Image (tube, rainbow, N blue to C red):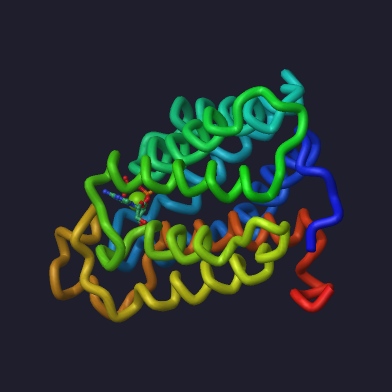
Length: 213
Ligand code: ADP
Ligand code: MG
């Protein structure tokens, strides 16, 4: 169960934790992108999240919705690669769905993320199984439950979803240019999506306590 309030501070801490995770894993993200893309995913994510966190510190938005919307706008304006507009859309749409309430319920967060993930699928004309970030995002959002549990389950589902992209053949994004040669590599975007959910579990404090609490 989540015992912390899902307020603006929680969402700021979540995005700071994503940024820290991306910093730690940037080399790995770039390595994965060098196998089936153009070796910039680590740098793209780092630039975007650093700018988003700086904007949140400067402007200190007062609602969860405003935090996500501002972070999403920054990702879109600072990241040149496909992942910028895609993650930016995810956060902006989720932020819009949350509105301007000071604090939100876990159920609202789940529904907002679901809306955001649908917007990513639409923007990228992609579906589950295309070997993209959606293969981690869909299972993660599905693992969230509306009672405030599920953050740890979502973290695991995202990681498993990312790992499950290895045998897939890419049908969207740069990796799709490789056709059959995209098989056998983990998708970089699915891997960074797993970091978003690992950071969410960490911020909610469920990572060490697990689901039993
Ligand atoms: P670029 O591909 O422009 O270099 P990045 O390397 O930052 O951008 O991001 C690549 C990731 O973006 C991929 O691993 C994939 O997960 C995701 N991606 C690319 N195209 C799409 C798409 N059409 N729909 C969903 N996700 C996509
Ligand atoms: Mg790339």
